[in-house]
Image 1 (spheres, rainbow, N blue to C red):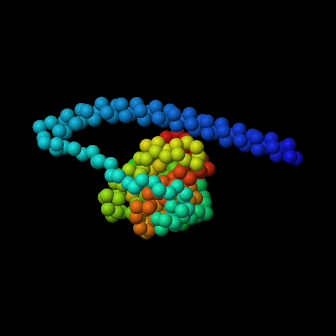
Image 2 (cartoon, rainbow, N blue to C red; image 1 turned 180 degrees about the horizontal axis):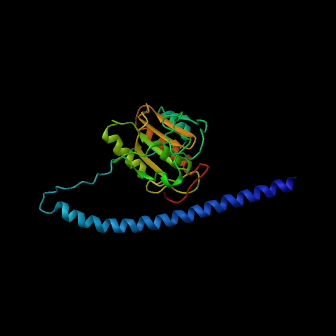
Length: 239
């Protein structure tokens, strides 16, 4: 019996190592794409600067300067959440069927439940300058191991800009695959009338912060590190 248990554990460890190796390879591919994109963006930016500033005294600039956020002081999720006066919860899983109708979720914002088919899943990215995806779309993103950072409508623009800075931070994760340049994360204005200033969600998990204060940044950082790619259908490629 002991030998059978050891063999089972060995196979489990081999599977986990293989999974992490595949994820690391996918991350390397993503980094190559990012570098290539930066090169192209730099070339485009040169042309944009010439067009938008020509004949003007610095006018025409539309790029937003990064808004600094406090350096990290706390790494433990429970401690950081408590310091920020945020609530951690692990709501029950509400389902995972594919549907084409509206879904009434029991948590706000949603943390699990029925959702759209795979071809309609919300992509990774910063939606703060546009329209947030419908809940049925980003709940599917949660099932793929994404972390979603949401803020209430009307939050001061300085705070929204700080969340953009936080979104773009690179960090290690408990899964073992780094989140780079907002990887595996979505940032958006809430569209479910939540009562919190800021909330971070993962599949079956929530960090809810009723009031935005500077300690919230560490709480969200720790939440993302803990729960990125910790979901039943994790997708390690960018989506």
